[in-house]
Length: 106
Image (tube, rainbow, N blue to C red; front, side, top):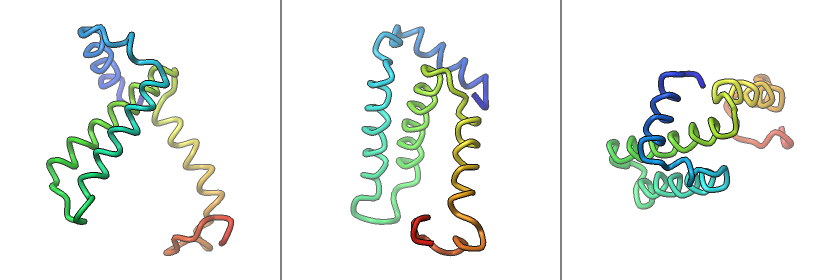
């Protein structure tokens, strides 16, 4: 994990509550989706969502993402960088700059 201190803090938090038993990859993935829905709900009726609520919901999404990565033995920074390299290849700057077009339509 990019921040081992954060990883250790999350592990301690979970261990103190004996919640690891509920943290199967499937359950963590479901929780990410649920929390992402709550984040999206912040913007349901207006694009100018309450910043404090967005911050809290984003923290929930990230927490479950970090927990899932840890459960799977993955380093979040490493997998993001790997995916970024793939995406760089799919979206060359000279073709994608300023465009939202999908890579296969560039």
